[in-house]
Length: 139
Image 1 (cartoon, rainbow, N blue to C red):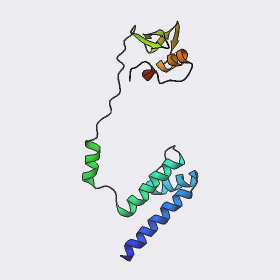
Image 2 (cartoon, rainbow, N blue to C red):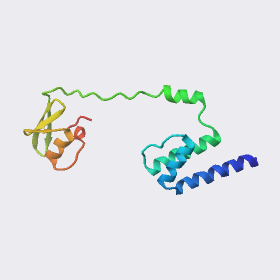
Image 3 (tube, rainbow, N blue to C red):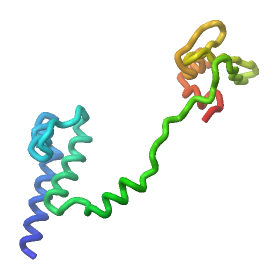
Image 4 (tube, one colour):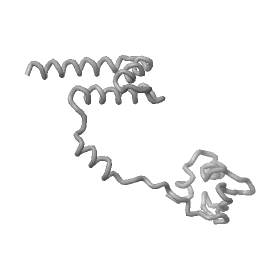
């Protein structure tokens, strides 16, 4: 049991040390533990991933059966397709006024101006930032 306690204490010390390291120190630790360059991520992300790696090396990672379950049963994300065709009209009633937007390829025309996104149109109408799909009731 003393062996397990000393192993646990070693892991605990390493995890506490990670929390006090600078980003360059975390990057160096990444290279030591993973054998490759760290991702261009923030300090918190690196610290979390390194914490997992330290524990994985000491206690062992996920067994092969569990890895298969986690990767094969995960639903595959599908990109959302736009259902709006060129020339389609989008309407929104806002504060007693009806607004009309026309789809123009991958842009949106409102009041004679082309916008790159529905969010831009929503901001032009309301004066504040909105998620365009939410503003126009498409989500």
